[in-house]
Image 1 (cartoon, rainbow, N blue to C red):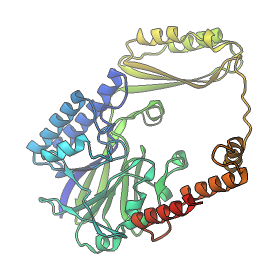
Image 2: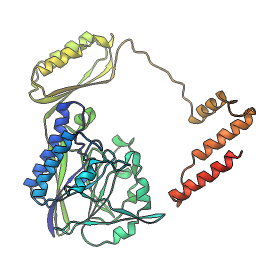
Image 3: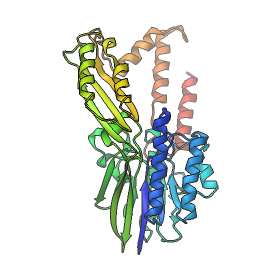
Image 4: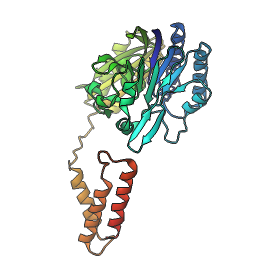
Length: 406
């Protein structure tokens, strides 16, 4: 058994509002596919978020089609799962069009065994006989229910070289930097796969995990915002070589432009002094065809309006920079005033809102309050362990009907 495949994720083709940066997001994807052809890959995996939106612009879509056609002419199949950005509950997505014309193959094939169990079927690659299965990604980890209902034993018992594609964070494998992102516990992944092709978290992770296999997050093919450009500087994907079930991974960098990052502290400076300091430091730098990131932080001794950002930008553009971005989220002027907010629990806020609006439904305010609290309680209930969506819905309807007879 000897073969090679490519693993991409989070391409977000068409991301960025500015045309210059949007062009790089498209070019990064095209460059990745050109490398894949040059490296003679047997197949390609895209673990979600091929597009930045379910319905990208026609110009972007046409270029993606052209790039994928190059793979098809080389007989390199592309297996895709939908991500949280290109997933659409209405199924109105350009992924569906790409699949219908044979440019990609949907690796998510789910069917219902019963009300409490889902079956995930494998797609077998014709040339290598590799078996691929994947679960699509949804925003805010709403795909968690799919993992909970998944018949994992059937997947684990399947023989052969197996790849599991997913688009979600794994709680035990996610760094503190991404602790605000909802994920799923490792235990919900089916065990015993050779390779786990992850996506969704924009960072690079490559590790053998006991009881599972090689779990890889390849990073985005191109960063999607200021912070990511500052942290990653470039995009990436993985080339994976397999020989006699031994896996060797190679990270492939996608450098579209050089990225230069500068950080300036404004503490104790006026806006004019900060401007002069920045101009002096940058006047000695070269920025030809470079993305320049400027991060400002601290508190000025003057108003924020005294900082001449236009002059700073003109200096950098005059040195033939490709693009200039600044981040001033942590920069404040002397006219900034701290805002103190009374901290109250959701329960306290809820009680105040109810008390302020009593008397609109019933003459008896205590009766009205009891009704409202009972209604809140029913509407805040969650699905119980082992309860299906249908039975959960029926239970809520029954409780609401009983209450409305109050």
